[in-house]
Length: 73
Length: 259
Ligand SMILES: Cc1ncc(C[n+]2csc(CCOP(=O)(O)OP(=O)(O)O)c2C)c(N)n1
Ligand code: SF4
Image 1 (cartoon, each protein chain N blue to C red):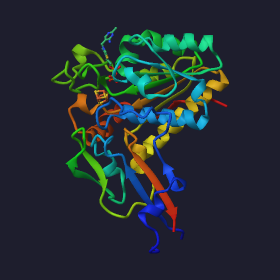
Image 2 (tube, helix red, strand yellow):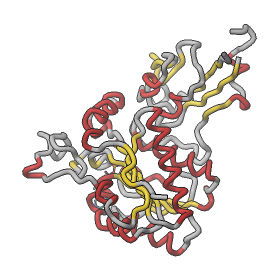
Image 3 (cartoon, rainbow over the protein chains, first blue to last red):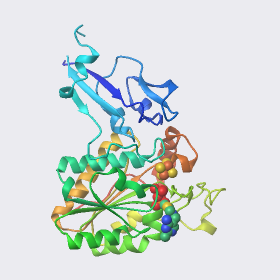
Image 4 (cartoon, chains in turn brown, blue):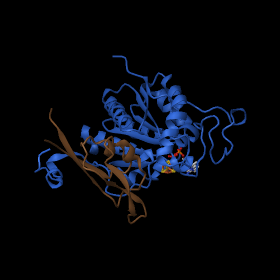
């Protein structure tokens, strides 16, 4: 079976910390930061390497701050 | 997994499978964290991008939280007086029938002050698309009760919950306009899970495509959260919406074109 590997890039300065992406990810890739961004929000960040590039987090993000990349391996 | 797959080798333009559409201006949206308005804006712009009709589309912005939609959507826009967007859209479409014309309205705008404009545009069967963001309250002005507020639902002007006896029944605008001969496609969607977002996008696409057929009005309701007005976190508000809004406002197509 062809396997895929994904990566996400989060525009942390545009993230409003709504947390919706965290539950949208089936691989628990995303968690909220301890640090805050320039607007004072705890932003989304990746915490493991299990991203499959499914785009669930990105399509749900109301602010469109997530870009998704995917390769076949 | 092979060793040579590094983060850097994946994060390349050619491997990009999702990015924010350029039809959204590169500005931070004015909506509260987690608000469905942002998602709905993005979906709509993705649809216009995929149909390649950015320069042929004219949007009508409402009064409400989306009053500034023209600041974010990189298309021609006209802002209308409160509730009057369907009337303005009617004029724009009749003057420029080759354009794709949509209104984007909240429930206070569309179902309270703009009830007459909404119903008559639907009944006349204008060849426009109405996008109706139903969050059950007046978001922008501080969470007051709207015609769409659920029985028992708390709002800033019904702090003990909407009491139907004194405050009347909530209005199901979408079911109502589906009865009118002028509507061609009527559907209710949501944007609170990735699956629902994808379905809502398909509905928006269909609603815009329908304008090419000149067969009447397409009406897309998107049941949305107003976590600030509902006084919940975005995650809680989406759960609350599933448990409380959807039984009253069930998702799905209400009127589909008969081929
Ligand atoms: C003629 C007029 N009456 C009242 C107002 C005040 N007003 C501004 S926004 C709004 C309600 C908007 O609620 P809704 O349409 O549900 O949109 P939301 O903010 O929830 O997206 C009201 C009553 C106004 N701007 N103009
Ligand atoms: S007040 Fe409600 S509708 Fe308006 S931006 Fe905030 S969450 Fe969205």
